[in-house]
Image (cartoon, rainbow, N blue to C red; front, side, top):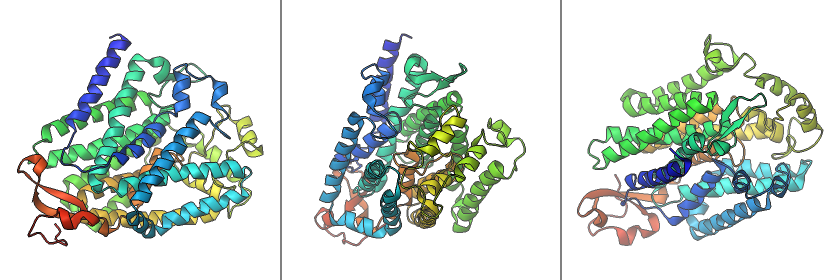
Amino acid sequence: MPPSVALAVFILGIAGLFVLDRDRSAQTSKALWLPVIWLWIFGSRELSVWMFSLGMESSEMMGDPSLEGSPIDRAVYILLLLIGVVVLVRRGKKVGRLLAANAPILAYFSYCLLSVLWSDYPDVSFKRWIKSLGDLVMVAIVVTEVDLLAAVKRLLSRVSFLLIPLSVLLIKYYSNIGKGFKHYGVAVYTGVTTTKNILGVVCLLCGLGSLWRLLAAYRDRKDPHRSRHLAVHGVILAMVMWLFSMAHSMTGLGCFLLAGGVLVATSLLPSARRPSSVHLLVAGVVLASFATLFLGAGGSSLQAMGKDVTLTGRTEIWHLVLGMTGHPLVGTGFESFWLPGWRRDKIWDIYWWHPNEAHNGYIEVFLNLGWIGICLLTVLLVTGYRNTLATLRGDPHFGRLKLAYFVVGIVYNFTEAGFRMLDPIWILFLMVIMKVPKTFTRRVARVPSVATAGRTDDLTLEESDADYLLPAGIRRNERV
């Protein structure tokens, strides 16, 4: 098939996915497009990189990515961030209650800001911290939507329906963009991203979202749209598995299988939804991963994943960078360890491929924020797990997805640095660990929906609108 014809077919196919997955009864605002665009960018390539890939910008115009970066990208980030802040300001007290309920997250971001003071490049570190606020702003937009569940579904669908099919298109028909080569001539498939590992992350997160929707449609036999939801997310899952086979991202695939197993177990096995079973399930997955990667358990599991006892050289990097911390208590400053200087020069003299991360999220936090950062991250993990379990008890459907993404955040960071600003892993991890105050929404049972011509639906109403939206005879505090 000629590339131009394939492009037209894929555009029509993507439009078809959006149409088939539509839900006219869902209530989400236009502001939800902001986090969608944010994830489109950081789940693929920055605008300047796209322009360079398409021959619209020279490498000289892109700037030094480790310092100032591209002015085009900077303008896009500032615009999205400012619009996001305006949206949150308009949501007023709701955002205030959200921030008050998430003191551990605020403490973590506040310490990141404080650490700018001892960075070798405080101006660059501060700019990166400002960009990191974009992650928090976009997550806050999602969780302050009137219908949180509908917002999460649309967020994941809109991201998946674009990034996954376009990755297939670029790999198969536009290999000059979707494929690269290692220094010894071996092909590397990247799709819409810049590396196979990032493509693995996109497949991991989008694949789990579609698996979640697929399992929900399979269980809900009364859903009138069940067939098209099964078809849409079945197609996305098939594409995800094909992309995994092309990218050879073993970390992404391994995390998908582990977190997917948690998702399937809690969806199909009632016994797996008991609190004690959930604890055992999560502990088993995390400990099994840790033992396989670091304690030599599992026999040939590492070889099957294409890794050796050094985890493809990762343990050597860890040993090297841990000896270069300088200030173990406070670290080198927010996102500062890999900035130009003697540390990076020494590492790059040893490794021809010029690493820019420690390939371990916990070590990465330690290098930049020290033991204080590790302690604050630990608080985030503990409180985040507690918040996830609370959601699982109150809203099992959404709670299962949150639990799966929580497991991804823990396990993925064993061999990759996912606790970093602008990383899709970090963005969705923030979303699932965030505590959402119960006063945000009111759920009302069996309210006739005008849009569905007499069919009854559960409506999620914003608290401030509840008095005049509820039908006569329904009390304000009535819940399901």
